[in-house]
Length: 190
Image (cartoon, rainbow, N blue to C red; front, side, top):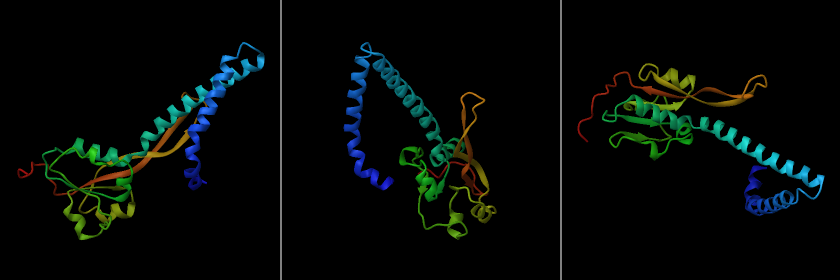
């Protein structure tokens, strides 16, 4: 179904224009009959429902980027002058990591996909940001213990007895690992 959306998405502006024109007609004629008054209430209700849904969706969506939040957390915990070489796995790269978040000009960033936990090459990284995976964590526990866990969106739980009537359930999605022998001393003047 979603693959076919790309073919009809170009019709949405036209459909929005028709819907806006119809809503405008109903609202400008509300005084003519009770049917227009009812239609006006429906139009206003739909606009309010859309605004609430958009606000809730925006709030929930900011939990979809644990990779970006992990890189910000690493920047917060490690001085920008430290000699850091950080590896980010594909999941992290897909969930919010971008060049705009790379604050230190002397840190080295690596997003290679061919490096896996258990390879000797992983020992060269001072920090690893990766998806939470118990097998990978077990393979790296001797060289890179966890520095921080970053939570991300799992699902929305409806609870009609409280306000707001929903809450976002979070789970650990990303982990920041730091090499055991890492010292946050400044780098050698790069």
